[in-house]
Image (tube, rainbow, N blue to C red; front, side):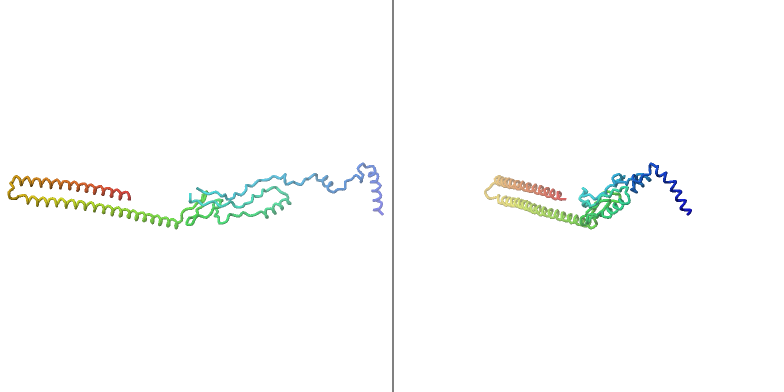
Length: 265
């Protein structure tokens, strides 16, 4: 009974106040809960991806297809297929999950086949017998001759020297044979000319021995002997002149031979 009286008294007090209150109009009230929350806590916008601050990360550098200038440098392999690095942004929870999904689906970096990495680049293999060298302080890789290749080059060089020496020896032997043949021919000419001189002298002595004959005076005999002597001397002088010419040819032959031999050393 006491509660009923209290309730009746409260209604009696509130009804006149509600009746004369300007704000008491339930038909004009907004029954949307979002409006109540906005009115209480203020306007809050969801951040858009375009308004976020971004930080650009440089793209991953791929291997280029350039080569170095010495026959002894390995060529760089063709550029590997590398995706650009994802640019991170300040994201909400939903955007972070989407970015993580994109990173999972991104392709991995694949180096070129049969390539050797060196200081951030990929290079093809060195030729057979060459050693691949990657500088520890940076720079381009290069090929240097291996021990097997060096031994092969040394053996080839020794073989070439031996062949050159053998060829030079054969040429000298051929020149020597030619010189000896020519000199033997000239020597034979000198021998023949000396034999002619000897024959002239022998004939001269015979002729002089036959000069004294009965009925010939001494003056006539001396005159005939003088003619024989003069004739024999003229013949011998001519032959001696020929011998000197042959000897000059022999000297010139030797000088030519010696010059040709020296040119081969």
